[in-house]
Image (cartoon, rainbow, N blue to C red; front, side, top):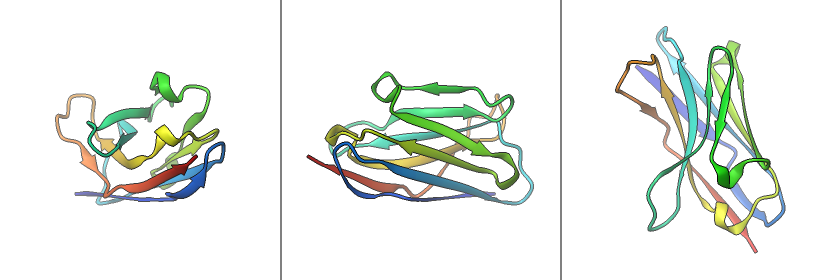
Length: 119
């Protein structure tokens, strides 16, 4: 079993920055990919960014390219999301995801952290 704990959300003004953290813990497990999703009120959950553990390649949604950066600390099984130049439309609950293998159909999810960007 894997547990994911997110932190770092909060209220920020437009143009500001936040850094989200997601720490994975549990019995020995492999990490294939970790990712950040978000869900705004009345909208579907959408992918924001993901990082493949080896070799550390990243993929971003077009809406956040150039503003958000995903990174990882492999020794701590932790992923970060640095969010700069935040916009009101970035307001959402941000969720962390972990998948253990490329063929796994099961995703571990965190509990979510609220990010609110005021105009």
